[in-house]
Image (tube, rainbow, N blue to C red; front, side, top):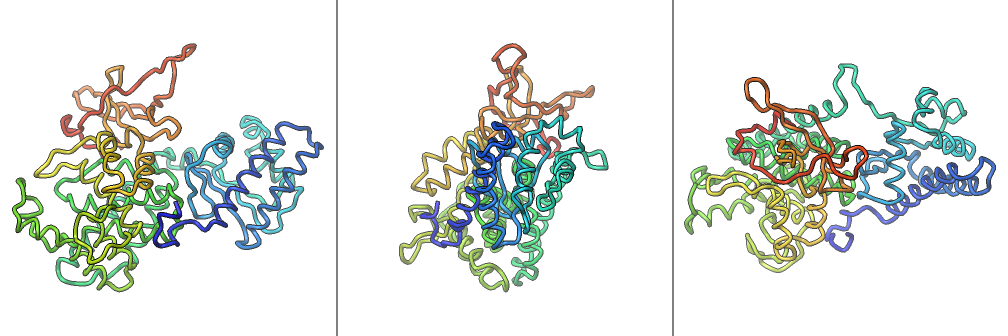
Length: 474
């Protein structure tokens, strides 16, 4: 969405997008031709020559190229590309079926090596397993300038890769919570934020976690500590903003700025009395005026912090200004908003509306996503909002749902190709009648010999009404 960006560095350079598309197209074509034609057929040679040219152009500039395949995303070196379909989806599926999570092409790559690699990719997953895996297979074919990273199914501890990822996500969330808390405490005391490096480090860990497994960290935004609402909200907004930023292919350094802006967007609230922030009733005119000072206070705090990215102060100032420039604070002159601010504005609204507040009951995440499009073009930038809804899916991760089997379940991850049918974790009842996590099932599963789904969502429920701590189930 290049025409959205006031800061033109917010998009991938066209050359990077073209490189990525060329490489993906040529790699997919070379593998497909190796499947379709006998080894000496000229189409196989032509496809591999085209692939070699696409790779060499990129390698000449950067030394090597790494493609990583994670869920429905491809990451080019360190830059997540937009979610994709068609041929690229087939390539992702083919690689993941063969336990390939990454492919690195390095300087010195020869046509003969590419030819042998694409031949190896025609072997079935079972055949490759018998040969010791794809990496062993290509080494036996004298391929030295292509390396393959395997999916890790089980860690040495016996913990599944999904379980490990979700445990890491919880640790990252706690660190982000801690960093936000320390920053706000310093600001409350009138001091500048002393350590922006530790904030940057945790934001980078959040980016890595979301790039590997979006659902692990996104799910934690539904597990709230209402006694520490502002801190939880700050971390959630950062996560949601980063998930949106990754989905529109922002470069790494831009994601860093976006994540920091999201984490510190409400830092100006430290100067507002708790009696106003937590007031259960409607604010009077004077109290409302005080609340509406927090964007200005936040911008001032962040502007006076050394080594703080400039956009963080801009996000703090602009995050309550709507796309049509209504909202607060009022602008002295009409001007375009920062795309960082427009992104955080969407994440901020969604998280606030799904949270329990002293003056308002929470809305269900799915209901908020249904309502937000009505505000498109007024409160929210339309294309960013559309992408945000797509990222979260019909039933956002962490939603509590009832199935047509009368089972309760937590949405565990979103099937991007079929958002109506997520992966869910069933909720079981132990002998003490306590709710405990059960098995994970994919709602796309059909009964054998029929085209009927085994389970379907029929209702979205409020976990508060069930007395559930969502952290126990994610």
